[in-house]
Amino acid sequence: MNEPLQTLSPATGYGDGQSLVQRNRVLRNTYWLLALSLIPTVLGAWLGVATGITRSLGGGLGLVVFLGGAFAFMYAIEKTKNSAAGVPVLLAFTFFMGLMLSRLIAMVLGFKNGSELVMTAFAGTAGVFFVMASLASVIKKDLSGMGKWLFVGALAVLIGGVINVFVGSTVGMMVISVMAIGIFSAYMLYDLKQIIDGGETNYISATLALYLDIFNVFQSLLALLGLAGGSND
Image 1 (cartoon, one colour):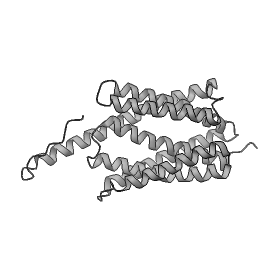
Image 2 (cartoon, helix red, strand yellow):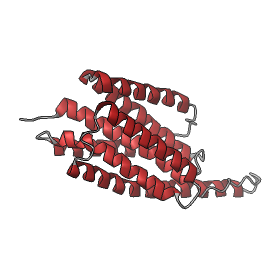
Image 3 (spheres, helix red, strand yellow):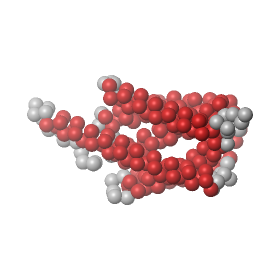
């Protein structure tokens, strides 16, 4: 999957054909692995909700466990992405992320309309992905310049989220959630365009990037719906 692109003479058209074949293969494998990665995520979330294992992971402790585990897994994925261990490590990471998400899901399910909010967040995330995938397939402009701005935006969301863990502001959480939805929706477009344009040739790395985009959009949308639309009546 990771062999260099062919760069034969443009006059033959062969190099372009090979590049297109490889890009399509990476995109297809990414979609398949992305779909597969949702299974461990759901299992992790279900286990967390059913057992309450993450219930005590609030405040600073939860933040340390989440960030420490997430960055450790991402480092391991980067190191194994060109080997047979890459896919199992990625799937283990998605299980961990589902487990970490279970605390928020359990809180939302505590509302009378909790199930509806979870399904709305899921449908909204799927809708965002469909729109961004459609845009990525028709936009001809190179979007690689967006990367640095999106990184700054994501860093701002991360820092704001860390601060708000200790501040505990509902308004702050809503603002951060709205920002995260916008930034990671744009990141979704950027990452998909990178694959389509041949900027990302490793389908495990591509899947990781898209998974994180989807996870952050879903988590932020669910938090926003819970804060704004949760009902106990």
